[in-house]
Image (cartoon, rainbow, N blue to C red; front, side, top):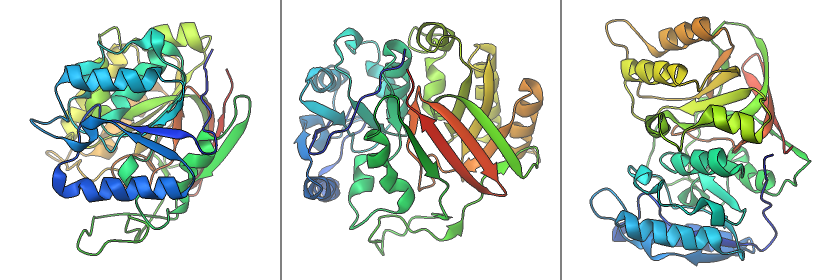
Length: 339
């Protein structure tokens, strides 16, 4: 059975950096985000790892996991909200005290998706793929990003619906900060690789940043078939994946590895987030990758969804039962918080 945490009004939010911390010149944006949360009525507790960064990580693995375990085990902390992603969260997955985790939301993306996926696979506690802490620093949030609070305040047994964004951000413009953080200028359009205008998919959500979660394959922390058997009674999985830096052939190799490892067994579909890094190689592009995968697996594939490093993004809950409907470029995601 899947266990769903509940974000309460006035909850204590724990900010820790299990991957990358924040160097001193950028401390201001973290403080700004914390201030926004406090104005919403939350209490915020910050760990020491948030304020440091050295050699591609916030602190040595022993320090990061010590702080993370403390936050995960404190009942009074209702949510963990890392500042952002990073590179080396995988260093600590074998040191987390999974049996002692008190159910609470963990929200984030990028390298944080390793933590999210591992916690759900091993414990059956739902985790949330969506905004990082620094995305909450704006004067206001766009409609898509703002849904994280509604999603995390959904009770077990209930459902929450989200809709595709109207616009997405093509490029950052740090010289001209936006009141809502993101510069949303391009029209959003979710597409099916089959070319069909109307597509519906239903399954238990699992996913994250493919660059990093692929390294869980073959380890005790990436046993997807075991999760299906132990926590969702064999129900099919609906994967969502987003690509931060992988070239098109590396993406293809990673997806084949996932298939060979059984990650796509009993899978109803795959949703791919927008990405601006997959440049063609010898005429082979990302759409070719999607087409080949759809043919091999015999399942629908939808791409350019609101997920990942090209914002904004929905809040997708690992373990939740989801119904995804795409209608001529627009989409809805209805998530049922069923055990």
